[in-house]
Length: 153
Image 1 (tube, rainbow, N blue to C red):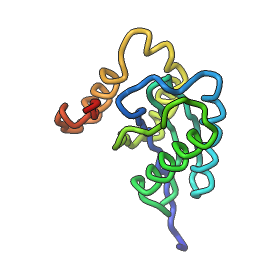
Image 2 (cartoon, rainbow, N blue to C red):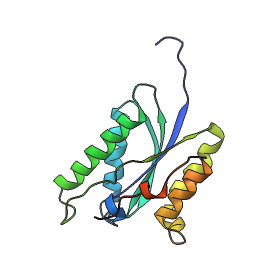
Image 3 (spheres, rainbow, N blue to C red):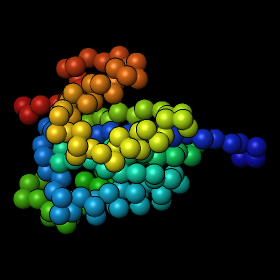
């Protein structure tokens, strides 16, 4: 649309179902490249993807062509299918339902980039659950802890 200008940066976070440590170092870079391709093919710009064995962080510049929920459905659905087709694991892979999406001002992009880049270091001291709750609280998002993660039934 003519005369439409946007600068929409978002920090996205989502985990492996049941917080299982299934993302292996031997193929995680391939996974991140695949996810980056999905995001770019949807018309957005990926700035960084990183994580640890049980979750992923994305930093992206979004175009107003698609909702975040539609993008996340595509990223999570296609990437879990990709993992399963390649049989990286002896079990079926699924992402946890839901995700965190945190809007960023331009002045915060560098700080969040560095934070995402240093995920392994951060998780020597704190769990994904602790990190996720902190992100929700820092962003003023009301939540009920019983809905943050789905535990095995």
